[in-house]
Amino acid sequence: MSGLGGLNKSANGVVVGLVQLQLPVVETPAQLQAQTKRICDLVGKARRNLNTMDLVVFPEYALHGLSMSTAPELMVSLDGPEVAAFKAACVEHGIWGCFSIMEKNPSGNPYNSGLIIDHRGQIQLYYRKLHPWVPVEPWEPGNLGIPVCDGPKGVKLGLIICHDGMFPEVAREAAYKGAELIVRTAGYTAPIRHAWQITNQSNAFQNLAYTASVCLCGSDGTFDSMGEGMVCSFDGTVMVAGGGRPDEIITAEIRPDLVREARAGWGVENNIYQLYHRGYVAVKGGAMDCPYTFMHDMVNGRYRLPWEASVQVTDGTSCGFTAPTRPYAGPEQPIKKVA
Image: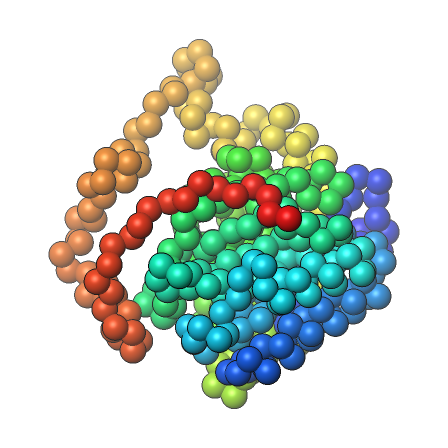
């Protein structure tokens, strides 16, 4: 039940719009500037399209396209004109927005970053993609953790980006921090369609959270992105799904109050709770331990697959990138809010 895509908005509803943005070509600063304006224009379209919309979401690579260019003149900073334009668009149209940037990094490769900006033009969530899509993407691995924020009408928002959603641990972390709606932005192409669909559904069901996910759409003359905007309910069912029409805005109403009700009241399949309360029918409070070897090994720096020595692709040379020589610098303190 999606309230007819938000046309019939309930008192407790939050209406989300997913923009299946036409895959752009951005190779010059002039094209970057033009694409910034186009995204801002589509913020306006979203508001005109549905005046009940609370949050409009643009795909990963909406600003930069899929060239994977790290050219300094195309990279963006939080205090640059592109982000300023996004803020202004949210203020002008009175709507929250989720945007994608390739962020300058003076210490190495750029970050693939996502921003959620409120209707007052304030950055409420700032995230750097934890899991770049190796070996294809050259971005620095994220180092801000997985932040969440209070979104429109108090919904707790989390943001993950593209390949992040293939790791159940990433969505679980967002939900563990309270996310009731997990937004996933992507630039995926058609071979990933099935995996995209089932992970969006499983991330919802395993965490009793809504998921709202959207890809770029159409062709840039080389790549074909798939669109596939979709919103899944917290029971894993697909509430609404888009196809391959560029610039179509997929909409749905979600109900954070029902997520809270399920998380508090469900017994069967309240899996995010039961993860740490195993078998509470038999033992008081359930078993509150960590029986998972891979978790202990990650924490202690000894994670190693039984087939580790046979893995053949371990850098980006197969996709034309030079093998890196510098180590990961480690995490930064999460930034909860940026003006």
